[in-house]
Image 1: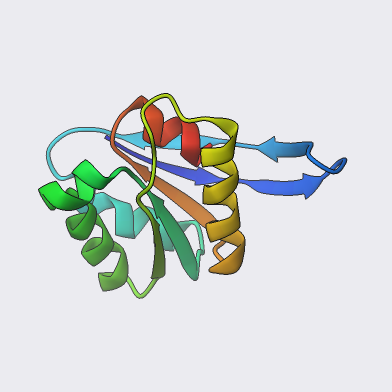
Image 2 (image 1 turned 135 degrees about the horizontal axis):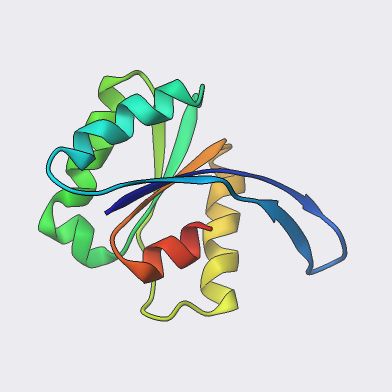
Length: 118
């Protein structure tokens, strides 16, 4: 399953963030190829792929990254999603998002990747 998030965040307090997360979920055959078209349609110049190491090792992460690059969208990678992610895991993903200057998030995998992505 692939989920693309369009979100903005603003710091409310030192550790409080407000997110607006309308999401599109694409599931099934050809979903990885659709990720690039959706990222481009959302006018993203750079997205962050949020997934776990299994999806990268299995090859699906690379397939999604190739589809996104094919549409002319740059991509960063956060593949350190843990099962039942902690707030620290989410903070690491957010730091990667900021450091890479991404505008959108593409979550690939199951519930944990989606949780971290959101």
